[in-house]
Image (cartoon, rainbow, N blue to C red; front, side, top):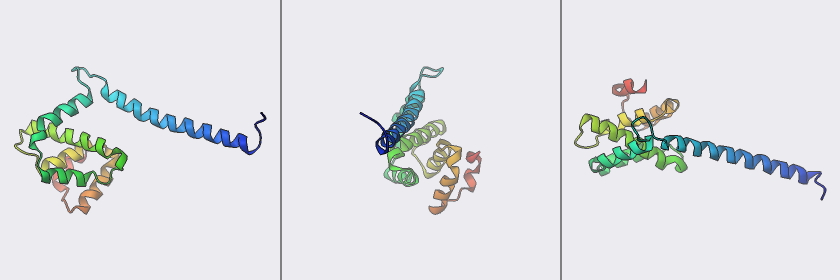
Length: 143
């Protein structure tokens, strides 16, 4: 079988596409693997996230869940659930530190800002502006 002409380019194109897609998938799998590795205290980031979610699940009401869902709506559908869990874990951590009786809008916004990577703060500010939420009381958390 002789590989020349368009068929050779077709095969090379698919080799490139498959290697690229496997590299992207491997990158995200490796990041998940790093989050699952135990830290000095014997628990991983994911363990702590689940701990905070379990300890504060009873503090969430329908209104606070709706606000969290609205805040994560700009996140692409594929990553939305993971982002929501990470943000809820951070909100739970803050709620436990502050000994909150329920998850308030203030806690949600603080946790959302702290759980969001700095590179995405521009989009976060835009979303909060769209929702007509004043960010001036939360400026310290953007740093």
